[in-house]
Length: 413
Image 1: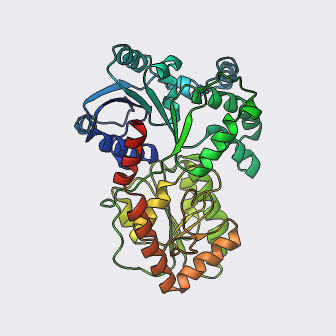
Image 2: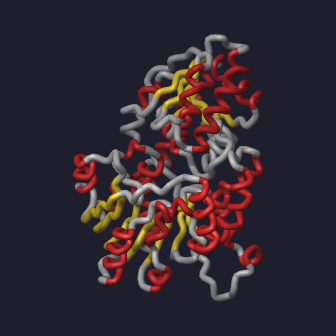
Image 3: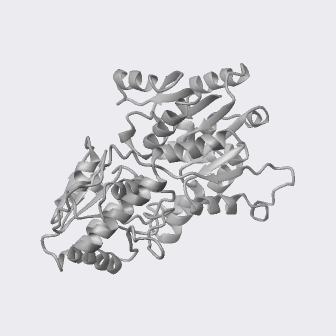
């Protein structure tokens, strides 16, 4: 099978972030069984050595240059919003659009050189022509619904620019509905995101005509490389917390601030020596400023995240916004670190016990976090139970071989 994979995010090394992790591991699995042609964009920090390494993973690799950065002045913002109203496509997609990559993809499809086209993030949908669906399989991996995420930020009061987001919400609904109709298959990472998409695409909401195509939606979660995230051999004990993730990502910034400003101070009233380490690439000034608070250390990109996870007593994932399954949660669970997380942080994961061993503790309010973390600080047996249960869950359901098989099966039916 000839598979054309489109990824405007350069997916190597896979440690760069969530999008890269998913894209690289899926293409690596598919390349064992199919001819994979990858089109991607080279960001300024990508090296020639990384391009060469990625080329070894696929049948053909085409790398395109990053489009020029657009102005961010007030007049330009107004113009981009007007363009969004007129074109129906968000400004960030248009500003990163590569005409050269579009022409290359068009030529491949016209020449009949691929049996399937996959977009490894919804931002890549811009390269897929609606008519392609009539001649080959087209698949989009939606890491999280842009409409659902915007709606959630407004509902939760976590939007940084409520007026902008209120104006954007109906436009995002129109945009997401339109691009979804171009595809044969849609892939969501959790059943929650699937339900959001079903709500968005339902005929009553949109007054769709009978002949409008509604694609099938499948749920395929993320996985973990167990060699990169081995289970820890020693419980360090103590009162140390960790939160990991790309620190220029809005949901992670919000979570880091919530943890630093509200959860940690309340916990330090019980444990004055409690510390927090924030680990992740590209910390923005708002995150760097948290390092000035008592007991908080901000660390940027690290070579091996597992080493930092293993040093912490508890991993906290206090996500308040952002749908989709969280790599950071899966990786902590694989590493055997007891996890306390929100509904968003645990989305898509069966962790609450019942007939199965407990795999994580759930919290959404400050006091719930304090009580859950306290129970782990005080109970070594509970820490061990969560560590073993979480690792077992990842091994049985969330390895990249398991996830890759699911993706491969979808592409062939």
